[in-house]
Length: 290
Image 1 (cartoon, one colour):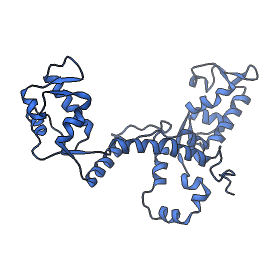
Image 2: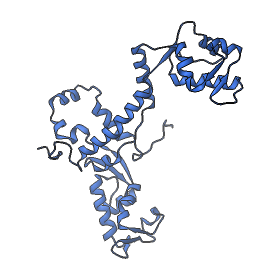
Image 3: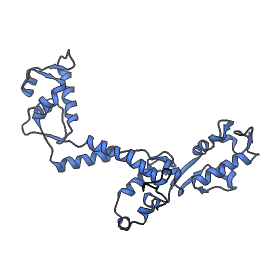
Image 4: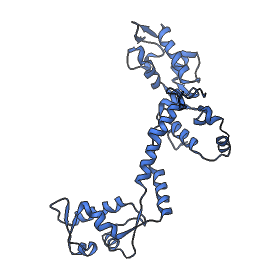
């Protein structure tokens, strides 16, 4: 049996693969479906549309293809700005508007069905798909599941040079998270020149040491060590990805050929999100200048 999977054949509860599965199923797919639904429908005006002429005459323009909500918003804005409305759901039309909508009044909850659908036609499928994909690409964002970053044994972290020197007597070192947490905890507990232990759980930072200027507090609880460490580190990247973390995927010949083909695939897409959509990495302002 795959060591990453439990007896039911799925990812084990605490495995890195389960973290990936939770992120994909409960985050990424839901976000993509939401955007796909949001941008699924696109309209264009019918030839010689009275509404299109009316909007153009009032210097309100839409792209050739637009979403239903776009049309609804511009029409309502124009009507409510030009027409006396005492009841927010009933609009009394002026003479020009009566010719456009072939009505004396508009009941706002019915405006889409009764007055807008007659002026438009749905865009061809290939056009709708093209616009949907474009808008999804523009709007898509989801935060990295940072628990994956900290869980992955091949994630690499930089630490503040002052702490790095206290840990190793040198700087420029990089660490896995578990290794870094272990040696930093040992530092807090055993370097009595830097820290003082007041009880089983309470420690303090000694004054006038190489580390004292880094901390804006004196006392801390043993359980807060990881929180402190996260503020002193930066994530540099992962040496592994989704395929490498799961033995089934790693040894799947079809996926190996796909990976070797240098084609963009869903696994690379997921790894990119995890590696980049977080605030754990060093910040470099762009562009650079001399």
